[in-house]
Image: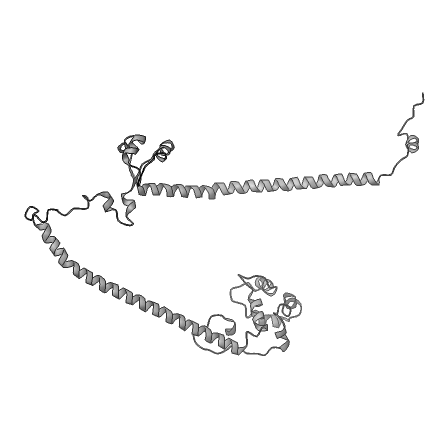
Length: 310
C-alpha cells in the first residue's frame, strides 16, 4: 500500500505491487460506477470480497464502513475510496509519478529541516551575543557599585558638593516609583453609588484627571472610604463575568431553548388546526357544489314544505 500513503517512507523501499489496468479506466472520472455497493453485494464472489477486505485498516467494523465507503459518503472530510479511484483514473498512481512524488516530499522535508537548523543556529548566535553583552555590562557595574558603596559610608556633612543623600524607594514620590507593567500594584479603588458616580462625571476639570479636593466637595472626605487594592477590583470583575456566563450557560440558554421549543410546538399546532379548518371548509364547499337542486314541487311531495291555503 506504499503508493497510497501521502507521507514519504523513512527509507527508500521501492514500490508495492505494480499491475496494469484496462485503458478504458482512464476515460472515467472515478470507480464509483465500476465498484459500487450494488456490485459488491450482487456480482462479487466471496473470495473476491475476502481479498478486498484485507486492505481495510485493522480495528474497524468492516461491514459498518463498507457501505458508506463504496457509496461515496463523507468519511472525516473526504472519502478515501473516491480519492483513490479519482487519482487512479487520472493517472496519478503511475509508478513514475509515485516515485516523483516521494522524491519531491523527501526534498521538501530536507529543505524544511535545513531552514529549521538555520533558524536554531541564528537563535544560538543571538543568545551568545546577549550573554556576552550582559557579561560586559555586569563587569562595568562592579567599579560603580564600589564607588557608590564608598559614597554611602562617607558622612554627608563632610563634603559640601554632595549635599544630597541617597533617597530610598520609600521616600521617592508615588508617581516616580511606578514602573512599566507595575501599575496595578500602586492602584487602589473605592466603592461609590451610582448617584455619586454621576456627580463625579459632571465635574469639569482641566488637565489630566480629577483633583482630590474636587472629589472631597462631591463625595466628602475620601479618607473615610475603604481603600482596596486594584487587584481586588479585577478579581471581583472577573468573578462577576464568570457568574454571568455560568448563568447564561446553565439557566438562560435552557430557558430560551424551552421557550423556543414551546413557540415552535404552538406554531405547528396552529398550522395543523388551520389546515384542518381549511380542509373542512373546502369539503363543505365541494358538497354544496355537488348537491342536486330539488324543486319546490318535489319538496312539497316529500313533505319538506307544507302549503297553507286560506
